[in-house]
Image 1 (cartoon, rainbow, N blue to C red):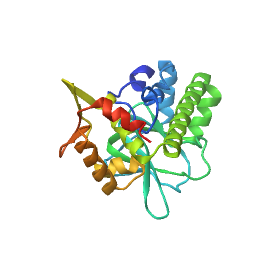
Image 2: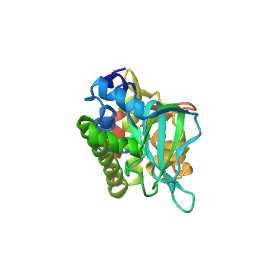
Image 3: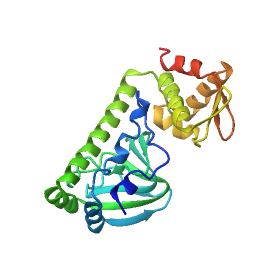
Image 4: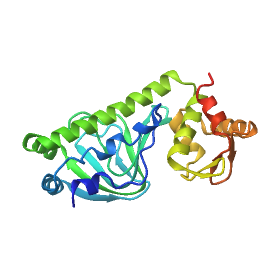
Amino acid sequence: MTARSIAIVSSEPALFLAEAIGDLNEGANFLAQLSSEVWETLRRKGTQVTIKAGSSVFLQGDQHEGIWLIEDGVVRTFYAAPSGREITLAYWTAGHFVGGPEIFGGGQHIWSADVMQTCRLLYLPAGAIRSLIQTQPSFALCLIEGLVAKGKCYSALAQMLGTRSVVERLAQLLVILAENHGRREGNRLFIERKITHDQIATIVGATRQWVTITLDKFQKKGIITVARQSIVIERYDLLMAQVGSD
């Protein structure tokens, strides 16, 4: 198996709040420059695991012991406040990794990761990562690129949470979903990715009730149509106006 075949295996990008939609999958190909020989070395040092949907990869407060490369499936990273309220950081797809930032181990995870769709992961323990960095410069460079992409993701999220109203964040999320998961029929865009009001709420930093009420307001304005299993963008121009409404 070549590095390229493992680095670009997902038909869908990651999902997180960001101003620049094109950056969502930037980190998915961070291993693309590895030779097949280095990739095979990486696989020998790692352990392939399968985790079922609904299970945890790691929990907030667990010790950092390594990273997980996503070969197939979707992993959500999220932070839980002492009150129990959660904020979703991102949904990561194949080609990305989870488990940072302390890739050499030590310290505690400051967020959790759970599996949304049954995942095939390659687990790289901290010792193996250190060894690969010391002996394989190409891997070290690739890992730096992956960490840069992660840093940009969380910076984008902090920017959205700190500078945009919750209405603007909801509108931006709908734009992201329309751009990456939209099927056009005439002037309408059908969002084909299934997403619940609860999931939307934890992404934009709101309650499920608020999401339901606000989506209904968007519908009354003719911006969207909300069905039981889908959201249809009726007026993309009006939705974009909501992104910069406040």
